[in-house]
Amino acid sequence: MDASVIESGVDYGARLAATLPRVLERIAAAAEAGGRRPEAVRLIAVTKSHPLAAVEAALAAGLPDLGENRVEELEWKARAVTGRGVRWHMIGHLQRRKAARALALADLIHSVDTVRLGERLSRLATEQDRQVRVLAQVNVSGEESKSGFDLASAADEIHRVAELPGLRVEGLMTMAPLVDDEAVLTKTFAGLRRLLESLHAGGAAVGAELSMGMTHDLEVAVREGSTMVRIGTALFGERNR
Ligand SMILES: *Cc1c(COP(=O)(O)O)cnc(C)c1O
Image 1 (cartoon, rainbow, N blue to C red):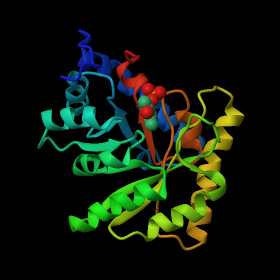
Image 2: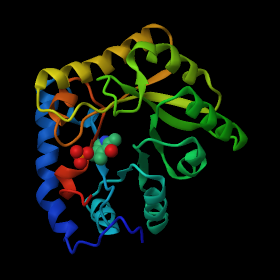
Image 3: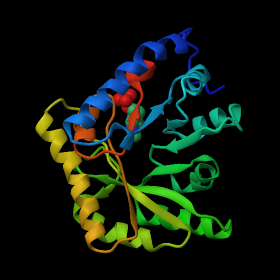
């Protein structure tokens, strides 16, 4: 097992039984506040840094969409539950040299953040005669520490990625700053939605998915149009670092 994951003795089944209803309520309330249907928001349970017991508990609770942010951890967890119907979401920064490994396992790669990574995935997809589903990650907030296309050049670059053979750009993904300031969060998520709208208006072959919203900001994200929230802490508890 991956050394970074410490077996914690946590009863993940019991924990999820307590936390999942609350998370579903938060999503439903936010959807209602935004005039949206709760079913339009898919819950991705982020199991990163938690042991396999968290994956098992999520599956038992009827959550088939699971998120990981490192290829190594994705690999050993995916191997452990092969054939169990998990849809794996690669949500972390992906190095080009690991693209093939992510592509082999992920149902959706949320983190295409450069044209070069898109080109690598496109080449692999073409070689394997398959379609690869991805999202383009955008650094809407402009924070130094975040990966993603810069907002200023994102439209041009995502147009290029969307033209690549073998790739299906299903939509966009972003991470908001780790703040509680609702105005900052709203600006970030509304900015991603507006970028998607302008891509559509410009005829880009990009789908309608908006992957945005984590534990601390899911309400604002759902209100602003999120179709996929990526939730770790609120479901599984704090991660060991
Ligand atoms: C860890 C992670 C999440 C989940 O964050 P929580 O705050 O624990 O809900 C979501 N998205 C990405 C890209 C992550 O790396």
